[in-house]
Amino acid sequence: MRALTVRPERPDSVEVRDVPDPVAGPGELLVEAVALGVCGTDREIISGAYGWAPQGRERLVLGHESLGRVRRAPEGTDFTAGDLVVGVVRRPDPAPCGACARGEFDMCRNGRYTERGIKERDGYGSELWTVETDYAVRLEPALESAGVLMEPTTVVVKAWEQIERVGQRSWFAPQRVLVTGAGPIGLLGALLGTQRGLDVHVLDVVADGPKPAAVAALGATYHHAPVSEVAEKIQPDVVLEATGVGRVVLDVIAGTAPYGIVCLTGVSSAGRRIPIDAGATNRDLVLENDVVIGSVNANLRHYTAAAQALAAADRNWLELLISRRVPLNRYADAVRPEPDDIKVVLTFE
Image (cartoon, rainbow, N blue to C red):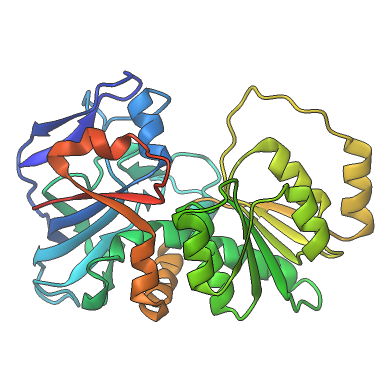
């Protein structure tokens, strides 16, 4: 079978190779790939920034944003041939730490977790793949064209869960949310905000094109003015930060309403320095009871909730987020971003 592989920490070593068909072990599904989402993490691994091959191997099969159809399922499970499924990305560390031992492997304390397509486990970027039944989540058949958005949706499901847990330390009745960044994470985070009945505002740098159109179709408000100006105007109770841009991060921390919560989901590049008034930032956080949290990855609970959120979403709106569908043999086109891209998807015919 064909698989999208890379030699980690070797720039531009990505290629489609023939690899042996996988053999499903006890308690595993054999799955035919339908689609694979491409994201910034994949591009960074391809650039040689990081990535870890399975032990004893030089190459890693890429891909963590999966969507597939079950070809064969073990007897006695809830899965049957033809089911549409997504595979969970992370696995708990073998030790395990206290969080992993309790199913909260997205909050691993010792860093010895593994991840499909990223860290020491082959990903889902192959024509066939296997996954343990305990780490597979079924999707409604109607989501076949958009179910590849499942993994990024789990990221924002977790982010919203963390926001709500923090808010519940006291009376919490948010009204306005500002999402910074109109990529897949930002737009899916905005979707979950509208599903909660909030007044959702999304900010990005572009003035027109598919991103403002997707925000408008969601019933949210789009902005492309400076973030400090927008935050001052709307006074958000919650900020979901999805750009990782240092200046934006600082501006939203300073721009929330009292008792504001900022959840950071964007990963910043190191080495960029900007001036900061640490005293003023500390003063505002303390005197307004503000909170800044980081959130990454997801566990099984978040996958289940993400499947429900996608099932409740408008299918036509979800389709707006998929900019391009590219066949596996043209993977180079998929990993090369274009200006109007939101989510690019590899397909397996």
